Length: 322
Image (cartoon, rainbow, N blue to C red; front, side, top):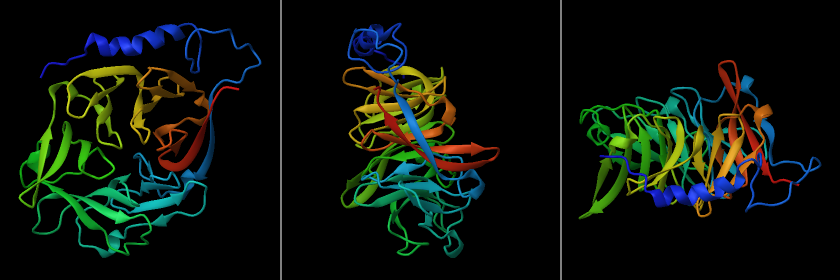
């Protein structure tokens, strides 16, 4: 499939970006007076909730519950899904991989509506389909037990029909009816119900080949990714027109799908308002952010704290210029 980038879409972003040329970091609705040296620029005010020495985290994005009160994250490979109060405290295991018969651990947790968390799970003996599981965010060590939310075969993501493989990344819409993931190639999945049975439709557009960091919006209408040229881009879930917003990694969405955040190549955090193209660059180089994820309100980020081969967890508030 050819890659389409309509000039009209690029122009929507180009006009606000041109108005910012030469203005330095920070958002602006248009030309204005120089704020002067006494103005504090936008910044990320971060704090560490879980030190890297705790050793509970896997190198994968975390996620926020819909009320932005809890964070969920993946433990080491083959491990559990955990929750942690965004205000701080001790983490609690939601799952218990030691007492279940699944052949792989829990991966790629993402928060859904109604206090649920979805995650990818391996397969059971005799059941060669792959699974998206769901657990209550109030669960403790597998009680109540997770249930199967969605099933799909390897054929849906470019594998053999009976082959199962953990994705490099996987994100879900808030009701779990759509997902975007990366196996050998990027795939977009959508589940339907026909005559009472669940079916899945999937596609892997040619222009997504080489893309990484796929992230579906909470409403399931848009997908952000880092393209083969290392540019942060987005598209409609059902479309093939791509809009580039900048260079960087780790795109993620606000709850309404109207703002897209990402980590730029300078180590700062950028939020783009899609309707206007307005960009705000939040100074964050000192925090050395890794895999930041925007909260539903678009006001904070959760991020990994890297120390050698271990990872901790931090939360940063996006502070506007003053």
